[in-house]
Length: 330
Image 1 (spheres, helix red, strand yellow):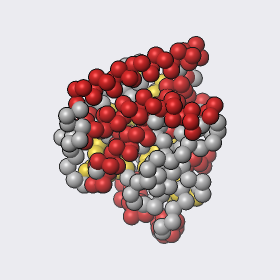
Image 2 (cartoon, helix red, strand yellow; image 1 turned 90 degrees about the vertical axis):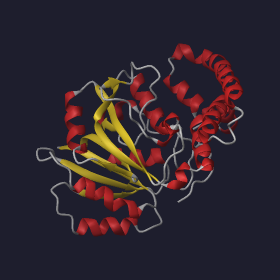
Image 3 (cartoon, one colour; image 1 turned 180 degrees about the vertical axis):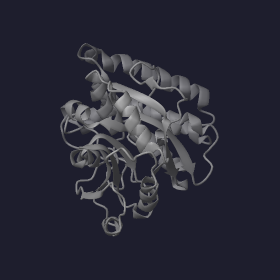
Image 4 (cartoon, one colour; image 1 turned 120 degrees about the vertical axis):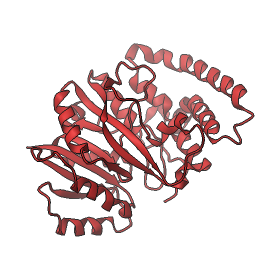
């Protein structure tokens, strides 16, 4: 039986794969762990497949390096394929711009075994920035999957105000995930070069929480997220937070109890409207010059219109994929 699988989804980032594989090749404390690396290529058009074949030909570690092509694009689709192909009791997800610390596999596996009540857990994600981020960046850091939430273990189920962790660096108990998460999620996340509607990770974790499982934070788990300069540009950041906000209503509906759902729209709409008005009067003079304030405003307004956007594009929440948001840069 395989104890742990590291699952990497990638799209047209062949130049970033070698540093990740070298970081995994150099993991420490894994001598007693039977583990593997699973790469899911989400239909790349670059030389990703050839690169992995070259690595496999000279791979000199006891843990195997396995490759799978997923032709249907979408972050949630690639992650689903990774879960299907992974053989581990636990699966740790890395994106193709994540670098784990040398003890990441050992710490993830030992924490999972020590916490059988958890179907999923995550840790700290530190930014590795190509250029300095804007002032007050910490206010919007979580939108770029930068997560630094202290040095104590806690449960996301009971900590108010804590947004659920992103898929990058997330570790799951495979069987619990299969039991809780539907095969076909509404939110696809990034699709090829497009952002799509973000929130696919929270949609999955909401189903896990609804089934009564814990989602934990382990501060001893560390990965580094490489953030190129273009991801800090105003247009990209606004597009990113818009894609998150437009999915807000669906996430709320997924997390809500059955009796709460008839009341969600009017209650949340009025509260969201209040937040938009208050924030605008506080920050309207700096929205054009302060990218952080602009992102916060975009997040609030896109969240406000989220129900109408979804109803227009997905009548009765059909199973059709959501339309993509603005294209992102390579």
